[in-house]
Image (cartoon, rainbow, N blue to C red):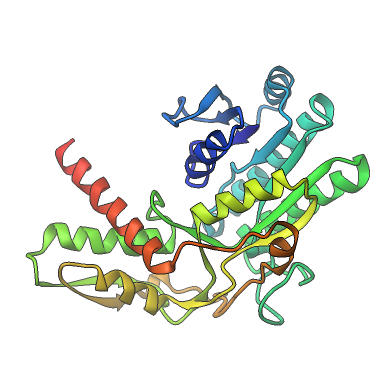
Length: 315
């Protein structure tokens, strides 16, 4: 199994799971080799290097390829749409071409995104919902989604398009909402006396999102590959949660009182106020269901940030 972006948030959970289940895990990434259990081989490579990627795939000859590498920040996409749209599309095209020419019998799982759906016409959102993205990030993922589908149709490749909703969990950076809120709570604990009171800034806490633990998501990817699936599948929790409730749950685990202040600079005109997905298709095909309770996901994320900040303070 070859994983792009193996050192990223999802990759660091997915790769060890695959190794535990008997897969030989090979990785590609921009940075130096990550310290991941079960990582058998690794190549430091920019996926924009099409010839280098073809050579890597030819050398590794994977049976399964999982494409996790992507620019996943909506904020960055709004600031640099050309870079993000071109980058996500080009790297995905290079990977599909490398597999088509060097490992045509491999199954490819592409991590697509619910951001491609845009503002829902109905809830829960299933795989038949049209793709009408609202921002450059969603547009980039819709293009990747359709590109992957075209390779399945045109070349007979085995392709899984995993439309992931909001993954969260331990190891998530503060570039994403749950990682950011957990980081702010952990920072408040580190800088305020116990049983004190801290104010943290946040964006629109009235939005409702479908959050799925990244560890459940990793298991979904494995089952989709193991089950020999092709086509498109949502990976989601199937429930919507207000961001205000997410913050309240994190605050309940804190050693001090936490209050939120809305930062107008974090508000977006194109905000989707509610999106919830349906995982019925994936469940029917594999038996997968989310297993990790949301409260555990939030506590594990908060604990990760506590440890991360403590290491940074002493390192």
